[in-house]
Amino acid sequence: MPSVSEIRSVHEAAELLQSAAEERRRVSIEREGGDVVLSTRRLDQVLEHETGDLTCIVEAGVRVRDLNERLAEQGQMLALDPPGNPTIGACVAANLSGPRRHRFGTARDLVIGVTVVLADGTVASSGGKVVKNVAGYDLGKLFCGAEGRLGLIARVALRLHPRPEASRTLGVQVRSAAEAAAVARKLLHAPLELSALDVVWPGCVAVLIEGSRAAVDEQFEAAQQLAGGEEDFGSIWEEAEARQGRARGRLLFAPGELASTLAGLDEAVVRLSAGVAYVRDPVPDSRDPVELALVERVRAELDPAGVLA
Image 1 (cartoon, rainbow, N blue to C red):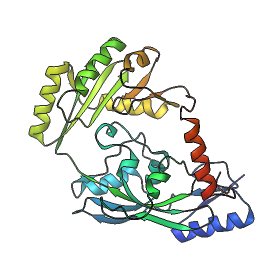
Image 2 (image 1 turned 90 degrees about the horizontal axis):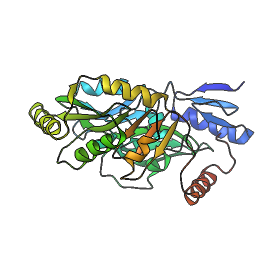
Image 3 (image 1 turned 90 degrees about the vertical axis):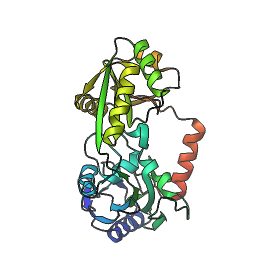
Image 4 (image 1 turned 120 degrees about the vertical axis):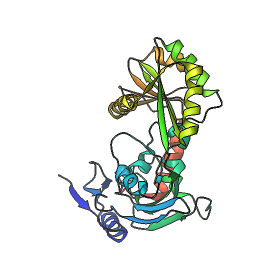
């Protein structure tokens, strides 16, 4: 059985990885697979919160909902809403997102700086505490989606957004893939500022509108006149979260292929602007072989001894 190490600091993580490299032990981060499983559960501090700059710096073990409860006291939020309550480190490592990806993007779009520990124990930082900082190599974007194969994400500087005064959800029931595609097309091309636009399939097209109360009411009425539907009070997003949470595959599709994609699926949550459907069954990796080869080259450079499992 692998041993589990709950590190409490960047220094402890560096020592553990350096020791593992010297002793030729393999380390996995937050999952089984190595001789040592490294856990960030105790890296759970909010280190800085600059309310005027709309930024904060947190340790990797801080959980999204816990952070947002704290930020809400200052009228701010981290605009990430993936299923469950993952840690910030997990969000970056897997480049997680939820319905608000439509407006705010994924973890990759909200990270402005990171401190990481490489496989040999080297501590490296890039980015900064302000949104427009461009100093150094962008390790944050490199580590987003790397799933712990390049090193440990220890600290993250994040871009924040004002917490909306109001929000409303419109649910448009659809009976066919063609109807879902037609409704989605209308909403995508309308002059509306939507926080989320998902197809919860089969069933409906879900629209989230956030902002000032007056603007939300105006946008909601415009969307309803355009697409029909009725107001929903949260059940759609609960269902979308449940379906995304139990999905085992991510199916990518090109613009214009929504109807044909939905026609072949029994159940899915579709992020329209991203062109991705979260589906029940595993999906083969669709990345280009050249891209996969580049990923392996980067991994070999950062972890030549193969310490990270």
